[in-house]
View (cartoon, rainbow, N blue to C red):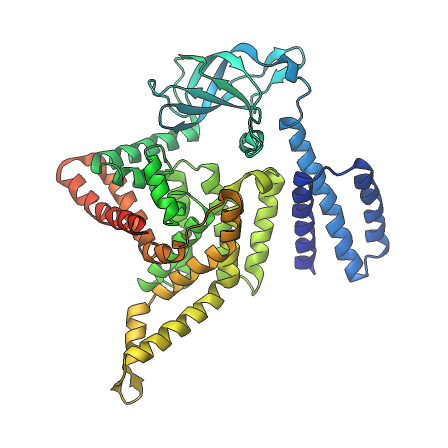
Length: 477
Protein backbone atom coordinates (compact mmCIF):
# COMPACT_ATOMS: atom_id res chain seq x y z
CA UNK A 1 0.00 0.00 0.00
CA UNK A 2 2.76 2.43 0.92
CA UNK A 3 4.50 1.86 -2.43
CA UNK A 4 1.24 2.54 -4.30
CA UNK A 5 0.65 5.73 -2.32
CA UNK A 6 4.15 6.96 -3.12
CA UNK A 7 3.78 6.07 -6.80
CA UNK A 8 0.44 7.91 -7.07
CA UNK A 9 1.84 10.96 -5.29
CA UNK A 10 5.04 11.02 -7.37
CA UNK A 11 3.22 10.63 -10.69
CA UNK A 12 0.77 13.36 -9.66
CA UNK A 13 3.53 15.79 -8.71
CA UNK A 14 5.57 15.18 -11.88
CA UNK A 15 2.39 15.43 -13.96
CA UNK A 16 1.50 18.77 -12.39
CA UNK A 17 4.95 20.21 -13.02
CA UNK A 18 4.93 18.91 -16.61
CA UNK A 19 1.47 20.25 -17.49
CA UNK A 20 2.12 23.63 -15.83
CA UNK A 21 5.38 23.98 -17.73
CA UNK A 22 3.48 23.73 -21.03
CA UNK A 23 0.04 25.22 -20.32
CA UNK A 24 -1.22 28.10 -18.22
CA UNK A 25 -3.68 26.63 -15.71
CA UNK A 26 -6.53 29.01 -14.68
CA UNK A 27 -6.41 29.63 -10.91
CA UNK A 28 -10.12 28.80 -10.52
CA UNK A 29 -9.45 25.21 -11.64
CA UNK A 30 -6.54 24.86 -9.24
CA UNK A 31 -8.56 26.19 -6.30
CA UNK A 32 -11.50 23.90 -7.12
CA UNK A 33 -9.39 20.76 -7.12
CA UNK A 34 -7.45 21.93 -4.07
CA UNK A 35 -10.73 22.13 -2.12
CA UNK A 36 -12.54 19.07 -3.47
CA UNK A 37 -9.75 16.48 -3.46
CA UNK A 38 -8.95 16.58 0.31
CA UNK A 39 -12.69 16.16 0.92
CA UNK A 40 -12.89 13.14 -1.39
CA UNK A 41 -9.75 11.68 0.15
CA UNK A 42 -11.16 11.98 3.68
CA UNK A 43 -14.63 10.64 2.92
CA UNK A 44 -13.68 7.85 0.52
CA UNK A 45 -10.30 6.80 1.98
CA UNK A 46 -11.36 3.14 2.09
CA UNK A 47 -12.17 3.14 -1.63
CA UNK A 48 -8.84 2.23 -3.20
CA UNK A 49 -9.43 3.86 -6.60
CA UNK A 50 -10.74 7.12 -5.15
CA UNK A 51 -7.85 7.19 -2.67
CA UNK A 52 -5.19 6.94 -5.33
CA UNK A 53 -6.94 9.32 -7.71
CA UNK A 54 -7.32 11.89 -4.90
CA UNK A 55 -3.64 11.58 -3.93
CA UNK A 56 -2.69 11.99 -7.58
CA UNK A 57 -4.85 15.12 -7.84
CA UNK A 58 -3.50 16.70 -4.62
CA UNK A 59 0.11 16.25 -5.64
CA UNK A 60 -0.75 17.31 -9.20
CA UNK A 61 -1.86 20.66 -7.77
CA UNK A 62 1.21 20.86 -5.52
CA UNK A 63 3.37 20.32 -8.61
CA UNK A 64 1.64 23.24 -10.35
CA UNK A 65 2.14 25.46 -7.28
CA UNK A 66 5.81 24.48 -7.01
CA UNK A 67 6.55 25.28 -10.65
CA UNK A 68 4.62 28.56 -10.56
CA UNK A 69 6.54 29.65 -7.46
CA UNK A 70 9.92 29.13 -9.17
CA UNK A 71 8.71 30.49 -12.51
CA UNK A 72 7.67 33.74 -10.84
CA UNK A 73 11.29 34.32 -9.80
CA UNK A 74 12.85 33.85 -13.24
CA UNK A 75 10.12 34.41 -15.85
CA UNK A 76 7.94 37.15 -14.36
CA UNK A 77 9.92 40.37 -14.01
CA UNK A 78 7.73 43.30 -13.11
CA UNK A 79 10.82 45.53 -12.72
CA UNK A 80 12.13 44.90 -16.24
CA UNK A 81 12.06 48.62 -17.07
CA UNK A 82 14.83 49.27 -14.51
CA UNK A 83 17.35 47.02 -16.27
CA UNK A 84 20.18 47.22 -17.18
CA UNK A 85 21.45 48.55 -13.85
CA UNK A 86 25.05 49.71 -13.52
CA UNK A 87 26.58 48.37 -10.30
CA UNK A 88 29.80 47.48 -8.56
CA UNK A 89 29.52 44.29 -6.52
CA UNK A 90 31.80 41.82 -4.79
CA UNK A 91 31.07 38.21 -5.77
CA UNK A 92 32.32 34.68 -5.18
CA UNK A 93 33.09 32.50 -8.20
CA UNK A 94 31.10 29.25 -8.15
CA UNK A 95 31.81 27.78 -11.59
CA UNK A 96 34.20 28.42 -14.48
CA UNK A 97 33.67 27.30 -18.08
CA UNK A 98 36.19 27.93 -20.85
CA UNK A 99 35.04 28.24 -24.44
CA UNK A 100 36.73 29.09 -27.72
CA UNK A 101 37.39 32.79 -27.07
CA UNK A 102 35.66 33.54 -23.76
CA UNK A 103 35.35 32.50 -20.14
CA UNK A 104 31.99 32.07 -18.47
CA UNK A 105 31.85 32.59 -14.72
CA UNK A 106 28.88 31.76 -12.53
CA UNK A 107 29.05 33.91 -9.42
CA UNK A 108 26.99 34.88 -6.40
CA UNK A 109 27.02 38.16 -4.43
CA UNK A 110 29.13 38.12 -1.28
CA UNK A 111 26.39 40.14 0.48
CA UNK A 112 22.79 41.21 -0.13
CA UNK A 113 22.79 44.34 -2.29
CA UNK A 114 20.07 46.86 -3.15
CA UNK A 115 20.39 47.47 -6.89
CA UNK A 116 17.30 49.66 -6.85
CA UNK A 117 14.67 50.62 -4.29
CA UNK A 118 12.49 47.82 -5.67
CA UNK A 119 15.25 45.35 -6.60
CA UNK A 120 17.39 43.45 -4.11
CA UNK A 121 20.22 41.14 -5.16
CA UNK A 122 20.48 38.32 -2.59
CA UNK A 123 23.51 36.21 -1.78
CA UNK A 124 21.77 33.09 -3.14
CA UNK A 125 21.17 34.69 -6.54
CA UNK A 126 23.33 33.55 -9.46
CA UNK A 127 24.88 35.80 -12.12
CA UNK A 128 26.35 34.58 -15.42
CA UNK A 129 29.41 36.63 -16.33
CA UNK A 130 31.01 36.56 -19.79
CA UNK A 131 34.63 37.71 -19.88
CA UNK A 132 37.85 37.19 -21.86
CA UNK A 133 40.36 34.35 -21.39
CA UNK A 134 43.37 36.53 -20.62
CA UNK A 135 42.97 36.34 -16.84
CA UNK A 136 42.96 33.13 -14.83
CA UNK A 137 40.39 32.72 -12.07
CA UNK A 138 39.71 30.03 -9.48
CA UNK A 139 36.50 28.64 -8.04
CA UNK A 140 35.98 30.08 -4.55
CA UNK A 141 37.87 33.27 -5.43
CA UNK A 142 36.32 36.68 -4.62
CA UNK A 143 36.33 39.39 -7.30
CA UNK A 144 34.70 42.80 -7.82
CA UNK A 145 32.51 43.31 -10.89
CA UNK A 146 31.76 46.72 -12.35
CA UNK A 147 29.28 46.84 -15.21
CA UNK A 148 25.66 46.51 -16.27
CA UNK A 149 23.52 43.81 -14.67
CA UNK A 150 20.72 42.59 -16.92
CA UNK A 151 17.92 40.08 -16.92
CA UNK A 152 18.27 37.43 -19.67
CA UNK A 153 15.96 37.61 -22.69
CA UNK A 154 14.89 35.10 -25.32
CA UNK A 155 16.25 36.23 -28.68
CA UNK A 156 14.73 33.43 -30.80
CA UNK A 157 11.58 31.33 -30.62
CA UNK A 158 13.57 28.13 -31.14
CA UNK A 159 15.55 28.30 -27.90
CA UNK A 160 14.37 29.26 -24.42
CA UNK A 161 17.46 31.08 -23.15
CA UNK A 162 15.72 32.22 -19.95
CA UNK A 163 14.70 28.66 -19.09
CA UNK A 164 18.16 27.30 -19.93
CA UNK A 165 19.73 29.67 -17.39
CA UNK A 166 16.91 29.41 -14.86
CA UNK A 167 17.32 25.64 -14.45
CA UNK A 168 20.82 26.38 -13.11
CA UNK A 169 19.47 29.09 -10.80
CA UNK A 170 20.82 31.94 -12.94
CA UNK A 171 18.56 35.00 -13.09
CA UNK A 172 21.04 37.73 -14.06
CA UNK A 173 23.79 38.23 -16.64
CA UNK A 174 26.77 40.57 -17.07
CA UNK A 175 28.62 40.85 -20.38
CA UNK A 176 32.29 41.86 -20.32
CA UNK A 177 32.29 43.81 -17.02
CA UNK A 178 35.45 45.31 -15.56
CA UNK A 179 36.84 42.76 -13.09
CA UNK A 180 39.10 43.58 -10.15
CA UNK A 181 40.73 40.85 -8.10
CA UNK A 182 40.67 41.02 -4.31
CA UNK A 183 43.12 39.67 -1.76
CA UNK A 184 40.68 37.04 -0.58
CA UNK A 185 41.96 33.55 -1.40
CA UNK A 186 39.67 30.77 -2.60
CA UNK A 187 37.97 28.95 0.28
CA UNK A 188 35.58 26.06 0.84
CA UNK A 189 35.04 22.64 -0.68
CA UNK A 190 34.37 24.08 -4.14
CA UNK A 191 37.84 25.61 -4.21
CA UNK A 192 39.47 22.35 -3.11
CA UNK A 193 37.62 20.32 -5.76
CA UNK A 194 38.48 22.90 -8.44
CA UNK A 195 42.16 22.71 -7.47
CA UNK A 196 42.24 18.95 -7.99
CA UNK A 197 40.28 19.27 -11.24
CA UNK A 198 42.93 21.70 -12.56
CA UNK A 199 45.64 19.23 -11.58
CA UNK A 200 43.89 16.51 -13.59
CA UNK A 201 43.62 18.89 -16.54
CA UNK A 202 47.35 19.64 -16.38
CA UNK A 203 48.10 15.91 -16.30
CA UNK A 204 46.06 15.37 -19.48
CA UNK A 205 47.63 18.35 -21.27
CA UNK A 206 51.16 17.19 -20.45
CA UNK A 207 50.45 13.63 -21.60
CA UNK A 208 48.66 14.03 -24.93
CA UNK A 209 48.02 16.48 -27.75
CA UNK A 210 44.67 17.35 -29.36
CA UNK A 211 42.38 15.77 -30.39
CA UNK A 212 43.31 13.01 -27.90
CA UNK A 213 43.74 15.41 -24.97
CA UNK A 214 40.51 17.20 -25.98
CA UNK A 215 38.61 13.90 -25.89
CA UNK A 216 39.91 13.00 -22.43
CA UNK A 217 39.28 16.44 -20.95
CA UNK A 218 35.67 16.15 -22.09
CA UNK A 219 35.26 12.53 -20.94
CA UNK A 220 37.18 12.65 -17.66
CA UNK A 221 36.64 16.17 -16.27
CA UNK A 222 33.68 17.37 -18.33
CA UNK A 223 35.57 20.19 -20.10
CA UNK A 224 34.59 20.37 -23.80
CA UNK A 225 36.30 23.70 -24.52
CA UNK A 226 39.09 22.16 -26.62
CA UNK A 227 36.81 20.04 -28.81
CA UNK A 228 36.68 21.73 -32.21
CA UNK A 229 33.49 22.04 -34.25
CA UNK A 230 34.85 19.32 -36.53
CA UNK A 231 35.45 17.01 -33.54
CA UNK A 232 31.92 17.59 -32.27
CA UNK A 233 30.40 16.99 -35.69
CA UNK A 234 32.38 13.77 -36.14
CA UNK A 235 31.12 12.40 -32.80
CA UNK A 236 27.56 13.54 -33.49
CA UNK A 237 27.35 11.95 -36.95
CA UNK A 238 28.70 8.69 -35.54
CA UNK A 239 26.16 8.77 -32.70
CA UNK A 240 28.89 9.03 -30.05
CA UNK A 241 28.25 12.51 -28.66
CA UNK A 242 27.11 11.02 -25.36
CA UNK A 243 30.59 9.68 -24.53
CA UNK A 244 31.82 13.25 -23.96
CA UNK A 245 28.80 14.15 -21.82
CA UNK A 246 28.37 13.14 -18.19
CA UNK A 247 24.89 11.71 -18.73
CA UNK A 248 22.73 9.11 -17.04
CA UNK A 249 23.59 6.58 -19.73
CA UNK A 250 27.30 7.33 -19.27
CA UNK A 251 27.08 6.90 -15.49
CA UNK A 252 24.83 3.82 -15.56
CA UNK A 253 27.02 1.98 -18.05
CA UNK A 254 30.14 2.92 -16.09
CA UNK A 255 28.70 1.57 -12.82
CA UNK A 256 27.34 -1.64 -14.38
CA UNK A 257 30.63 -2.36 -16.14
CA UNK A 258 32.54 -1.71 -12.89
CA UNK A 259 30.23 -4.10 -11.05
CA UNK A 260 30.87 -6.78 -13.68
CA UNK A 261 34.61 -6.13 -13.46
CA UNK A 262 34.73 -6.46 -9.66
CA UNK A 263 32.59 -9.60 -9.77
CA UNK A 264 34.96 -11.14 -12.32
CA UNK A 265 37.82 -10.27 -9.93
CA UNK A 266 36.22 -12.48 -7.26
CA UNK A 267 34.20 -10.01 -5.15
CA UNK A 268 30.72 -10.86 -3.93
CA UNK A 269 28.04 -8.98 -5.89
CA UNK A 270 27.05 -6.64 -3.04
CA UNK A 271 30.72 -5.84 -2.35
CA UNK A 272 31.22 -5.15 -6.07
CA UNK A 273 28.21 -2.83 -5.98
CA UNK A 274 29.59 -0.79 -3.08
CA UNK A 275 33.05 -0.64 -4.68
CA UNK A 276 31.58 0.59 -8.00
CA UNK A 277 29.43 3.24 -6.32
CA UNK A 278 32.39 4.44 -4.23
CA UNK A 279 34.41 4.92 -7.41
CA UNK A 280 31.45 6.74 -8.96
CA UNK A 281 31.21 9.20 -6.05
CA UNK A 282 34.97 9.81 -6.14
CA UNK A 283 34.84 10.32 -9.90
CA UNK A 284 32.02 12.89 -9.71
CA UNK A 285 33.90 14.79 -7.00
CA UNK A 286 37.12 14.74 -9.03
CA UNK A 287 35.45 16.34 -12.06
CA UNK A 288 34.09 19.17 -9.91
CA UNK A 289 30.65 17.72 -9.14
CA UNK A 290 28.83 19.54 -12.00
CA UNK A 291 25.06 19.59 -11.67
CA UNK A 292 24.51 17.31 -14.68
CA UNK A 293 26.90 14.65 -13.37
CA UNK A 294 25.49 14.87 -9.85
CA UNK A 295 21.93 14.42 -11.10
CA UNK A 296 22.93 11.52 -13.33
CA UNK A 297 24.87 9.94 -10.47
CA UNK A 298 21.95 10.22 -8.05
CA UNK A 299 19.51 8.64 -10.47
CA UNK A 300 21.84 5.86 -11.55
CA UNK A 301 22.89 5.11 -7.97
CA UNK A 302 19.35 4.87 -6.59
CA UNK A 303 18.10 2.83 -9.52
CA UNK A 304 20.99 0.36 -9.48
CA UNK A 305 20.88 -0.01 -5.68
CA UNK A 306 17.18 -0.78 -5.90
CA UNK A 307 17.69 -3.27 -8.74
CA UNK A 308 20.54 -5.10 -7.00
CA UNK A 309 19.21 -5.05 -3.45
CA UNK A 310 15.46 -4.46 -3.61
CA UNK A 311 12.38 -6.38 -4.51
CA UNK A 312 11.13 -6.97 -8.07
CA UNK A 313 9.84 -3.77 -9.70
CA UNK A 314 11.47 -1.64 -6.98
CA UNK A 315 14.08 -0.24 -9.39
CA UNK A 316 11.74 1.84 -11.54
CA UNK A 317 9.91 3.02 -8.40
CA UNK A 318 13.19 4.15 -6.89
CA UNK A 319 13.98 5.98 -10.12
CA UNK A 320 10.54 7.61 -10.02
CA UNK A 321 11.06 8.74 -6.40
CA UNK A 322 14.53 10.08 -7.23
CA UNK A 323 13.14 12.08 -10.17
CA UNK A 324 10.33 13.43 -7.96
CA UNK A 325 12.76 14.61 -5.27
CA UNK A 326 15.02 16.26 -7.85
CA UNK A 327 12.11 17.96 -9.61
CA UNK A 328 10.68 19.11 -6.27
CA UNK A 329 14.02 20.78 -5.51
CA UNK A 330 14.27 22.24 -9.03
CA UNK A 331 11.02 21.93 -11.04
CA UNK A 332 12.58 23.64 -14.08
CA UNK A 333 14.60 20.48 -14.78
CA UNK A 334 11.63 18.65 -16.24
CA UNK A 335 11.21 20.92 -19.24
CA UNK A 336 14.42 22.88 -19.61
CA UNK A 337 17.19 20.37 -18.82
CA UNK A 338 17.79 18.08 -21.81
CA UNK A 339 20.51 16.25 -19.89
CA UNK A 340 18.06 15.39 -17.10
CA UNK A 341 15.51 14.12 -19.62
CA UNK A 342 18.06 11.95 -21.44
CA UNK A 343 19.56 10.69 -18.18
CA UNK A 344 16.18 9.65 -16.81
CA UNK A 345 15.04 7.94 -20.00
CA UNK A 346 18.39 6.17 -20.50
CA UNK A 347 18.38 4.70 -16.99
CA UNK A 348 14.66 3.84 -17.26
CA UNK A 349 15.32 2.03 -20.54
CA UNK A 350 18.19 0.08 -19.00
CA UNK A 351 16.10 -0.97 -16.01
CA UNK A 352 12.97 -1.91 -17.94
CA UNK A 353 14.34 -3.51 -21.10
CA UNK A 354 17.96 -4.55 -20.67
CA UNK A 355 17.01 -8.06 -19.43
CA UNK A 356 14.56 -8.60 -22.30
CA UNK A 357 17.08 -7.33 -24.85
CA UNK A 358 19.77 -9.45 -23.19
CA UNK A 359 17.72 -12.61 -23.69
CA UNK A 360 17.14 -11.71 -27.35
CA UNK A 361 20.84 -10.93 -27.93
CA UNK A 362 21.87 -14.19 -26.25
CA UNK A 363 19.48 -16.13 -28.47
CA UNK A 364 20.80 -14.46 -31.65
CA UNK A 365 24.44 -15.02 -30.64
CA UNK A 366 23.92 -18.64 -29.62
CA UNK A 367 22.09 -19.52 -32.86
CA UNK A 368 24.79 -17.76 -34.90
CA UNK A 369 27.51 -19.76 -33.14
CA UNK A 370 25.56 -22.97 -33.72
CA UNK A 371 25.63 -22.29 -37.47
CA UNK A 372 29.36 -21.53 -37.68
CA UNK A 373 30.67 -24.04 -35.13
CA UNK A 374 29.78 -27.70 -35.31
CA UNK A 375 31.00 -30.76 -33.48
CA UNK A 376 31.56 -31.48 -29.78
CA UNK A 377 34.37 -30.93 -27.30
CA UNK A 378 32.92 -33.72 -25.22
CA UNK A 379 29.94 -35.95 -25.81
CA UNK A 380 27.62 -33.59 -23.92
CA UNK A 381 29.27 -30.23 -24.73
CA UNK A 382 29.04 -28.81 -28.27
CA UNK A 383 31.85 -26.57 -29.56
CA UNK A 384 29.30 -23.80 -30.24
CA UNK A 385 28.38 -23.51 -26.54
CA UNK A 386 32.01 -23.42 -25.40
CA UNK A 387 32.97 -20.86 -28.07
CA UNK A 388 29.93 -18.72 -27.30
CA UNK A 389 30.62 -18.70 -23.55
CA UNK A 390 34.29 -17.86 -24.04
CA UNK A 391 33.91 -15.10 -26.64
CA UNK A 392 30.75 -13.32 -25.48
CA UNK A 393 31.22 -13.32 -21.70
CA UNK A 394 30.25 -9.79 -20.60
CA UNK A 395 29.87 -8.46 -24.16
CA UNK A 396 26.19 -9.36 -24.50
CA UNK A 397 25.43 -7.48 -21.28
CA UNK A 398 27.02 -4.28 -22.59
CA UNK A 399 25.25 -4.68 -25.94
CA UNK A 400 21.91 -5.10 -24.16
CA UNK A 401 22.46 -2.04 -21.98
CA UNK A 402 23.39 0.04 -25.02
CA UNK A 403 20.34 -0.97 -27.07
CA UNK A 404 17.91 -0.59 -24.14
CA UNK A 405 19.17 2.93 -23.36
CA UNK A 406 19.00 4.02 -26.99
CA UNK A 407 15.47 2.68 -27.46
CA UNK A 408 14.22 5.16 -24.86
CA UNK A 409 16.43 8.14 -25.72
CA UNK A 410 16.22 8.04 -29.53
CA UNK A 411 12.81 9.81 -29.86
CA UNK A 412 13.96 12.59 -27.50
CA UNK A 413 17.26 13.02 -29.37
CA UNK A 414 15.38 13.39 -32.66
CA UNK A 415 12.91 15.84 -31.06
CA UNK A 416 15.57 18.11 -29.56
CA UNK A 417 18.29 17.91 -32.21
CA UNK A 418 16.35 16.92 -35.31
CA UNK A 419 18.94 14.28 -36.14
CA UNK A 420 19.96 10.81 -35.02
CA UNK A 421 22.83 8.84 -36.49
CA UNK A 422 21.68 5.69 -38.34
CA UNK A 423 24.98 4.12 -37.28
CA UNK A 424 24.64 4.91 -33.58
CA UNK A 425 23.87 1.34 -32.49
CA UNK A 426 26.82 -0.12 -34.42
CA UNK A 427 29.29 2.59 -33.36
CA UNK A 428 28.19 2.29 -29.72
CA UNK A 429 28.59 -1.49 -29.82
CA UNK A 430 32.18 -0.92 -30.94
CA UNK A 431 32.97 1.78 -28.37
CA UNK A 432 31.01 1.01 -25.20
CA UNK A 433 32.80 -2.27 -24.38
CA UNK A 434 36.03 -0.27 -23.96
CA UNK A 435 34.44 2.86 -22.43
CA UNK A 436 35.10 1.95 -18.80
CA UNK A 437 38.72 1.02 -19.62
CA UNK A 438 39.06 4.28 -21.56
CA UNK A 439 37.83 6.28 -18.57
CA UNK A 440 40.12 4.32 -16.24
CA UNK A 441 43.11 4.94 -18.52
CA UNK A 442 42.17 8.63 -18.70
CA UNK A 443 42.01 9.04 -14.93
CA UNK A 444 45.29 7.10 -14.52
CA UNK A 445 46.96 9.38 -17.07
CA UNK A 446 45.49 12.56 -15.54
CA UNK A 447 46.78 11.62 -12.07
CA UNK A 448 50.30 10.58 -13.14
CA UNK A 449 50.71 12.78 -16.22
CA UNK A 450 52.14 15.72 -14.27
CA UNK A 451 55.17 13.64 -13.24
CA UNK A 452 56.97 14.14 -16.55
CA UNK A 453 59.55 11.91 -18.24
CA UNK A 454 59.09 8.15 -18.39
CA UNK A 455 56.19 8.24 -15.88
CA UNK A 456 54.11 10.44 -18.18
CA UNK A 457 54.97 8.29 -21.19
CA UNK A 458 53.93 5.06 -19.45
CA UNK A 459 50.76 6.63 -18.02
CA UNK A 460 49.66 8.07 -21.37
CA UNK A 461 50.24 5.01 -23.57
CA UNK A 462 46.99 3.08 -22.77
CA UNK A 463 44.97 6.31 -22.95
CA UNK A 464 46.50 7.15 -26.34
CA UNK A 465 45.59 3.71 -27.72
CA UNK A 466 41.96 3.94 -26.54
CA UNK A 467 41.63 7.50 -27.85
CA UNK A 468 42.93 6.53 -31.29
CA UNK A 469 40.47 3.64 -31.37
CA UNK A 470 37.50 5.89 -30.48
CA UNK A 471 38.45 8.50 -33.09
CA UNK A 472 38.89 5.69 -35.64
CA UNK A 473 35.36 4.41 -34.97
CA UNK A 474 33.92 7.94 -35.04
CA UNK A 475 35.64 8.68 -38.36
CA UNK A 476 34.58 5.33 -39.81
CA UNK A 477 30.91 6.25 -39.54
